[in-house]
Image 1: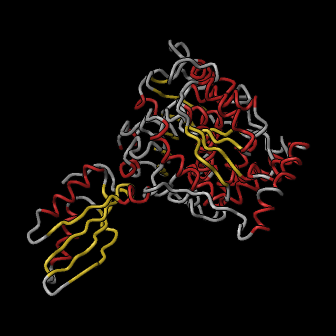
Image 2: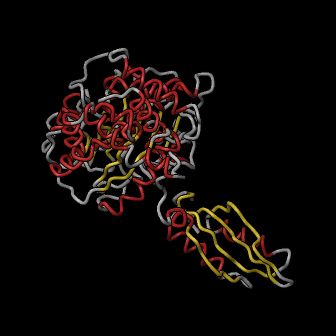
Image 3: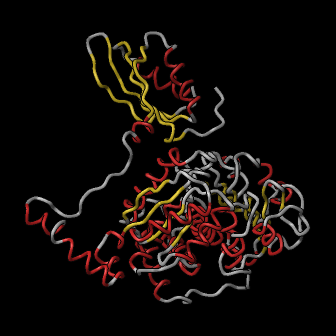
Length: 490
């Protein structure tokens, strides 16, 4: 059975199976799963009698269809009784992934009187007299709203608010696990820009920060820009800035591995939406040699018709040679490929045409722009967004620490200096003495990451302008300034 997609824990299943109690039965099960292209991750005996053994066999598959194929293959084995199949991802999501837990005990009337009425009235009056005390005396001090309209959920498209909720729950869980930040999903049943801005503005008093998530471009740019002007708390679009921070951190170490300077390399970015534009903006600020931006209309170049304002700015400030060909031609001779677009756009042979010691970041999830196994045959450093591959570039490296630092500093806005400081902190956690082609970013479970990022962001918030200036001017100071007026969806 030919399986082109890689098995993943995201499609892990547990199959309860009864088999004859003989020495070969268990081996037949694991062999069958392996031949079907899945990976056995656990096998537990749950019951037995003199003639049969009941086992729970857990395996990673490539997708739902592949899981069905594995189960069918097991069903066809002689003497095997498949009794139940459980999708472990759906089991994990039953009833949601987060909950509210009180921080104070309410064991008696005395405690109730201080936490609620009548004592709480004094706290309300104190905040009414001095609104800034809300950061000190309420959840605002440590709480973030994770806001989405469900218009760009992962790589799945416009699924709507209800279908976006599992992602926002997961985001909230990651905030707590890695940054100690209390976050709550706010999914909105509207995709009208004005309405979203008004709703978020109205709920903002309860929060110390706003994390915009999975809102389609170009509306996400305008929403972020307007909210930044309206609110006195940081507004952070993770699909833009979180991705850009992590890519800059990974590229910093990848360039150290291959001995190249950012100012000397040519980068091809596939995908000029929210993430791609933010990545290119940050690389330009750091003095990258050149960038070719590629999207559905082709390579963004001067003279290309039908460009929205964001793409027009990119066409005018990247692509020095004004290349106008296809993606395969763009990567030929390039030092770096960064994909934040769609699966299977390139082959290993395309990567072979890149410059010596090429760097490939194929970040489309779950299926990258190029098979990482093929890319590694020709590129010096390969990274993906997948947790089952080396060099996972994952936004969880950035956003928990970024918000932790901003909340601790009582920051009123997110700045580019914070982004650069966060990227440097992530890169430096690995340590120059430990980086190699398969280790350019720390593990998402490295306990040093979030505190390092938080400290760097806090320092940038308290000492604005301390971050080293870019090598050359690259246009407006904020991505939203060039993209807010966009009217055509990239």
